[in-house]
Length: 273
Image (cartoon, rainbow, N blue to C red; front, side, top):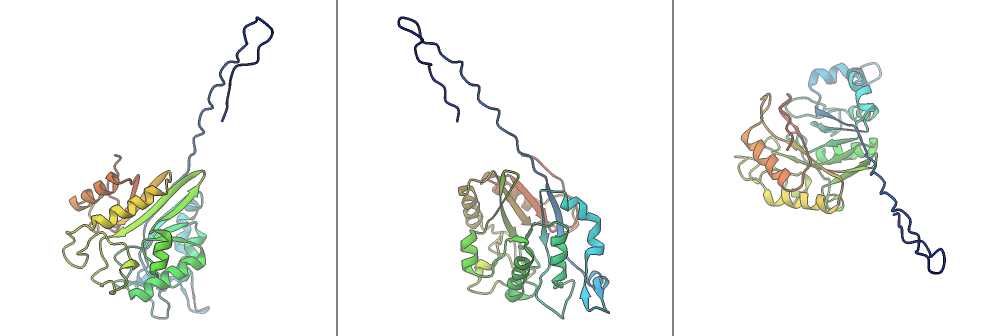
């Protein structure tokens, strides 16, 4: 803070000299680069291609090398992890994904800093696989948001991950429309952030109370930005659905600054509000 005031009198009967007000400094502008990748998943052929039979190990870096420089050059790189790390040897692709832990290590190597884990494949290997996935991400040093191994873990984070880069703080939240028909175990409702109360059936009852509560918790952190990562929409549809528009309005009206969507596997329109 710069403070200014009148200078002391220069002599008896002489008016006091006053200093010119010091101009306020121009606020510095901080700029960061956020890189975003879509759904990270491995189908059977990709797992087989990454396997080194002689060494008995997996390595996905040959495929990921094409985006490595783009992601490493960003200040923050995020994506949606649409597979589990539930342990081998029964690795699998569609329809129930379970990928070797080597993928997590390779993602860290190419610069992925944070992933959303709330998506329709989060429960592919049950609650055990969900929890194991988080353990692997913690081990390699990738932040995660959207699923939780225990109520204590969710309570501690508030379901929010804050990353500060280049003087800009961002609160990340994550939600999914459903879990491909897999029920969240009774008593473990904390384990995944869902958009709908009827996530197993009609997807018509938005869990407004839970969503708004999460956004209020994010606003209370007073970060510069709030980013919602959301798994929604229709696969391979090039335009958003009315359900997506309804949810987007709910997010923005309650404090979200950025929405990053996944699930369609194609690029849908981008809008500014």
